Length: 183
Image 1 (tube, rainbow, N blue to C red):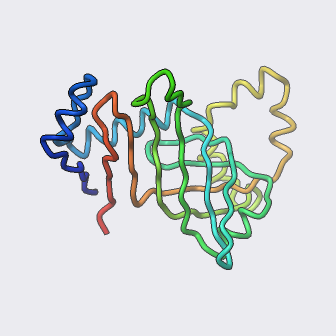
Image 2: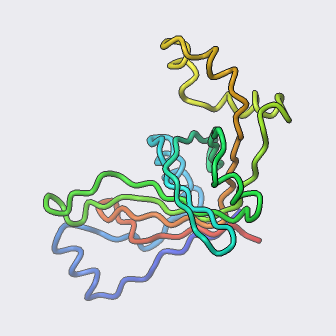
C-alpha cells in the first residue's frame, strides 16, 4: 500500500531529545502508522484545506469526517469548488492547540497531500447516502431538528484520497514521520 519513512536522528539529536524525556521512533510498521493517523482523524473534525487555481492558492477551514484515511467534506460551494474542478491536487492540515509556553514539544499535527474529487448530492444520491453513513453529525442534526434542513441542501461532496501524510507528535516519538502511497 505504501511506505513509511522515519527520519534518522543522530546521537546528538537523540541525546538532546532524551534530556527532555522524548524517545524518537526508530521505525514503525505501515499498519501501526496508519492506525495512528486514522485515530487522529477520528478524534478531530476541522481541517484547513489548501487548493490552487491559476497559481492563486486558497486555504479554507472546513468540518470533515472520514472513513479510514479517506476524508469527506460537505460544502455548499465557493471558490474551493472552482479550484478543485481546475486542479484536484490538494493539501490539508489538522492540528491540536499548541501552547509552547507550557510545553514547547507539545505540537501535534498532520499534513496530508492528496487528490480530491467533487460531486453534487443530486448528481449521485446513492453515493451521497453511502458517504453520509460515515458522517459523525447525523444524530446531532436530528437532535437539533436540523436534519430536514440539511436534507434540503444540494451539497457538493468533496472526497480526498491521500498520497502522502506527515505526522508530528514529539511526545509520542513522531518527528515528521512520513507515509507515501505506492504509485
